[in-house]
Length: 520
Ligand SMILES: Nc1ncnc2c1ncn2[C@@H]1O[C@H](COP(=O)(O)OP(=O)(O)OP(=O)(O)O)[C@@H](O)[C@H]1O
Image 1 (tube, protein in one colour):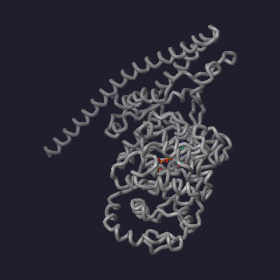
Image 2 (spheres, rainbow, N blue to C red):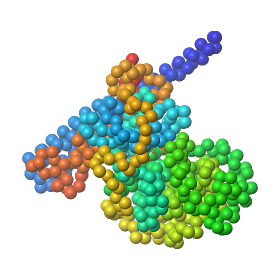
Image 3 (cartoon, rainbow, N blue to C red):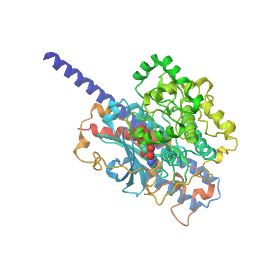
Image 4 (tube, helix red, strand yellow):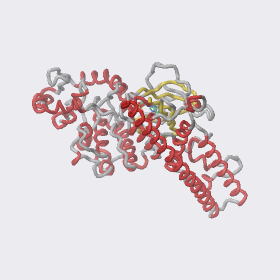
């Protein structure tokens, strides 16, 4: 009994210590961010004044433009002070469901802007040890401002869920496109693979590794251009099972070695006893694909061997995934597909014995070569020395890399209005749309629990979300019809409101929201 009391005391005091540490961190970050805000605001004004001074804009207009800037700054401050919560959004159609939650279309009540809301259950994230991954996703989205990466507007949390408010990409995902098309021609595949190269390059430049690049995470905007999403929520397969399988692999490999050379058939989960022709393999893959996508383990088909083996891996693993996607685009199913995910993993780990091209698939030598240069050992893998190695591959010889996002897309999705969800599967509502759990009401006054502490630092607001601003360059557009815009003076936006800056500032915001929860 005494011992139990002592244990409770110890637990209580460590919780108090955690709370004290969080409060200290909150105060420090708050003041640091305030200083930074003031400095950045000054810098923006200084940049604008300098540009105007060296332009021929009449003095009166200059004064008005500076006033415009100050007005936007005030709006931004207001947005930052507002504690955003799920109540600020009208919840519309569900467009995706993953292992940790769902994605749905939503409308911001105040601005009418349409976004995609990804909602993740905190308890699931904790149980599956995904807290760090979800933080990585939020950080990456906030930090990397690139047209190849889905844009994050806000992230926030309530007692049960984490929320990401992202731009809505109405063209659907690559998984759906591939299921509809079976295979793509080389020129269509080249367009998407080239855009993926740019997207992967842009995250690598910020020192992030995706590790889970797959067609489900390649989304299409209304023009058919591709963007990468879903960062950090990787779902590694249980590798304990895999290591048991490794012990028997010599024997298994022997039985799996010869198949393709015979008549273009593939062995399956039972290691050779169940043969499938490429056509059957395709049908089988399509039947299982959605089930795999929505399962909690996900599909391992695109994961690099070094990731599966937990050997230690680097950015090269994303180039492997790209190779597997390219194979699927051109052949119809991924290179190591099998009925059972563990067999797929084994095939990936022993890729040398299992990477085959069906005889009836007519691929150019360049395409085959690129796939083989991506699906190989890390030491020989193209991209290990940077994305330029891949860009220089002969398969891409006719690609104008710097024009890729300006050219017409390979497919233009059918999209009718901003609420159109025709390019997504239909999902049933499992629970009625959740009522708000923060923003107001008693739950906001709850004591901080260890669960909340795990997610301190999640809240984020992007400057682009400032009311009525859909495009960052709008900042530089005049609100008066008669007044010239800064854009029209300089051609492009010159005032620098980096998303990165906003992300750092709003780290304080997320602490502030936890701070509220901490107050008695
Ligand atoms: N910004 C977006 N715009 C449009 N659709 C989206 C957006 N984000 C996600 N989706 C849709 O929702 C699906 C699931 O999204 P996502 O992969 O991010 O969720 P998840 O819960 O992390 O899933 P996973 O199990 O793959 O980790 C995507 O495949 C896509 O169809």
